[in-house]
Image (cartoon, rainbow, N blue to C red; front, side, top):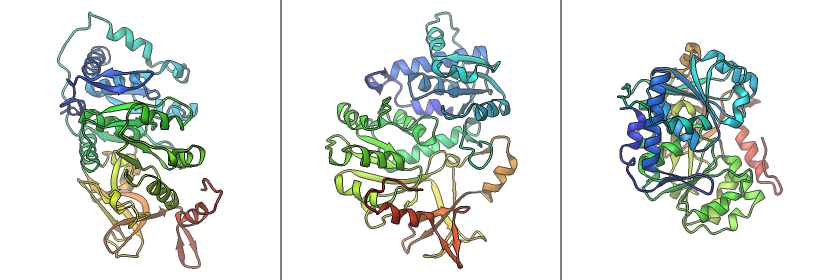
Length: 418
């Protein structure tokens, strides 16, 4: 099954809005119709099993284009919108692109490219074309590559993570299971969709029949008003999201009557921030999670009821994912020892785009080697101590940068450190 069919399977006919907000809104039937029509256009004009770049901020254009590219049997290429021109040019040269969906305000980034550019304004014209011929859309295998997400190139060229239709479906099911999402859930979205964490919010709420509020303000504090105004039940952020809210707004003193839960991933949030949030919102569920683009999005979570007892832990593997901490020989470590986190599951990527060497380094013996070092406690809960390349070795001891950061974060007046 094409993953878009899976995402819309139960929700396409719902008489409610999927996107809610002051700037844009769209109901499920209308969204489904737009995706179908744009997918037909792509099949007629570029074919299927091709690569199509999508360069856009969070908006209705992104949602429709993203789903239509997948629905048409093509592979969507995603990268951040603030990528340097040099890095973007490199990605365009490395890929075999047949078209680019680009937000009009970002069109200058691909101005010198000869690839067909389709802007948000063009999509409006395409969808209003009554002569668009209806035909059967191509079928895909669950192991076909659905999307390639290019990650940061901080240690070399950007790596393209190849995710299949099965990967997205498996991770979406897992997340829905442990977050207990329902049709009544509404998420306040500040994370970009070109980032796997943000994209998972789109996948899960579309599948379950929930809704999204897309935050467009440059001021993060605006989420406080929007959560209440649009009666959001969920909020997701990376460590800097919560640090900014705590230090620059009155977030901790606010009342959010409809908010049911918050999630955090994308790096380690210092324990003192977790404690502040837990103390301010004792009735809200706060999920500390761990993941990677190579794992589609999520790999582990810590049950909110264990937040204080297991403070600093990323928990255990999510449903459908086996998470282990192993030594250099690949054997599970004992409590108190340090090893590398490895994962297995249907959510693990197919590999890196046109990079067999890089793929073989992280996918070994059916396991995804994360490069993250961790320890476990007597109950099997995992505690990340740092990246393998960043561990400080001093006088025979291994020192985690996270430990040092934790101490500095506890100093009054410190808002962030690295």
